[in-house]
Every structure is written in C-alpha cells, then in structure tokens.
Length: 390
Ligand SMILES: Cc1ncc(COP(=O)(O)O)c(C=O)c1O
Image 1 (cartoon, rainbow, N blue to C red):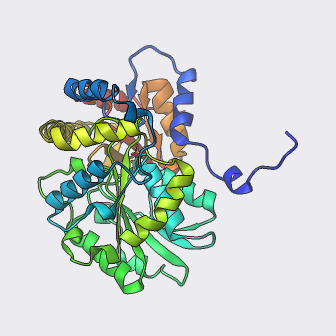
Image 2 (cartoon, rainbow, N blue to C red):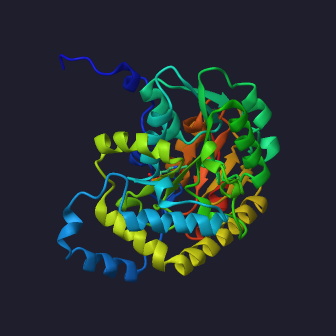
C-alpha cells in the first residue's frame, strides 16, 4: 500500500469483542460454550413485531430515505415515552433518531467537541466511547474507578478535572461494563456540576429499561430547563431485542439537534427506515413484553450474584446489574487478557478482560449475562472453581 492512513485510527485499539471471539480458535471444545462476551439479549423480538414489519415491507416508502433525524411519528412517540417514564417535558423537537446508540454518541461528540478538546470519562469506560474520542483527537480525561462507591464516580473528582477545554462529562447508567446503577442524586450532582461549568452532561441510558426497581432512573428531565445541560442517549437494541436494526436516539436542546443533523446527514442520511418502523411498533405495542424481559433480567442478576456468593473460586463479584457483572479475578499480577483467554480456552467461558475498559483494570473481567440462560450460571460458577493458571 503506497498511501498513508490516519495515524489517529492507527493508534486506536482493535474492537475487543472480535478479538475475544478469535480466542475460540485455540479452545479445546470438550464442553459447551458459555458466551458472556457481548451484551446482546438472547431472545428474539415477539412474532407480532416481525409480522408487522413484514406488512410494512409492502409500502413503497419503506425503501426510501427517512427524514435525516428520523420519522416524525417515532420522534413524537419517543418524546412521549420519555416524558411518561421520567415525568418531564420532552418534545419531538428534542429528539434525533440515529443508527444505534453508538452513532448517537459519535454524533453527540462531533457536535460538542473539536480536536484538542476534553471529555471527562469515568473508568472503566465503554470501549467504543474511548475509541471514538481517540479517532477524533478529543482527549478523554479519566475519572478513577471507585469500587468503594459501588462503581459510582465521584463528582468532586470530576470537578477537579474540568478545565477550559472540557466540553462534557459522559456517564453510562446502568453501566457497561460494571452493571452499576447510579443513584438519582449522584446523577443530579453531575448535572449540577455540568451546569456550574457550562458544559454538557452526556448520559448514555442504553440499559435504562433494566433497572433493579420500578420508577424513573433520575429526575433530570423534571428540571424545566433540562436542555441547558442534559444530552441523553438511548438504544433500541436491548429493550426491543433489535440490535441489527440499528436504531438509537439523542435527546437534547433543539439547537444541539439542529447542528447534529448536519453530521447525521453526512454519515448516514438517516437511520434505517425499517428499523425505525420496528422501534415505533415497539414503543406503541411492546411495553408489557419489555417489562417481562426486565423481570427475567432481574432474576438473572439475582441468580448470578448467588452463584458467585456460593462459590469458592476466588472470582469476586464487584458490581452487578442490567446486563453485566464486573468481577475481580483471583490471579493477582496476571494480565486480564491472559485470564480472560484462559477462561475461554480452558473453561469455555467467553468474557471481556477489564483492560478493554481502560487503564488500571487488569484485575477485572466483565461477564455480560443477557446472552445466557439462568441455568448456565451455576455451571459457570463450577467451571470458575476449576480456574488454575500456570
Ligand atoms: C453503553 C452502551 N452504549 C451504546 C451501545 C451501543 O448500542 P447500539 O446497538 O444502539 O449502537 C452499547 C452496546 O453494547 C452500550 O453498552
């Protein structure tokens, strides 16, 4: 190859999930694989949703571009959904529909920050957030991991890191990779902080439908002037089990949406139209189905936690919730990647090493359990008890 590539991309890490799957090539396949690598729901969408999409395919409009920031009925339905869920005033003009929540993050960052600007990102981070910032030449300023606070970052530590080039603080709750659910007052403290400094609070709520208890995750949308600081990101991938349809959303001030529209037009023109139809159907018809899945996931969290508690493997559950368990491994001094590879190749448990989620995470392994049934949990714990590294 005679041409030069963008050196910023060259410095970005490889996609971790693909790397982890690559380890299976060296595995002794003497028992079934317990795949806890990727955060994907195991179940399919309900048959009624599939039937609806089949009918929608007959509409000639379905193969055309959608409006840049989404079908108007979907933006309205999502604004209504958020207003009901959070008790706030959210209008369709606050909503942009994106091709998944990863794209929502990418667009939000492009709209907020320039190369050389800073974004405050708590450790451990969702790896795609760091990867995207690295690609754009935006500096991620890390907050320390606080297992002593249940994995909830400390606003005072964030404040100490805010400078003239800081544009936003990014929070993910429920968190990927830790599963930690940030309490409403902690989220409010971060919003207060953002307002004091005239920066944005970007809140990724991909897992908002999998809270441990009913009720709103936070009260930020009830603040009349919430668009002053809050930018909420959402994914239809998890709650509606439609990751392949690629639908997500950014909810923010109309001025933010207006600028973000330019970026969306360039990268995708619009989110996939059939996916938007699926999301619209989901919001209108699938609330009971989503609630039933939420209950299943809550039970799975309990069963997983019990499996770790009952087990003398030395693998210690640090935090757990939504789709994730963050676990301290017993092999002190060993790289998380080596431990995770050992789990894959010797024990048939596919996980993601803590090192994928930022510096200082070598003692940790992420288990994403939405993809396995509850009856696999005791078997997983049994296998962990066999974990020996030479
Ligand atoms: C925190 C977080 N944000 C965004 C995404 C991506 O969601 P989507 O499939 O909507 O792009 C994920 C997926 O794992 C995630 O964990």
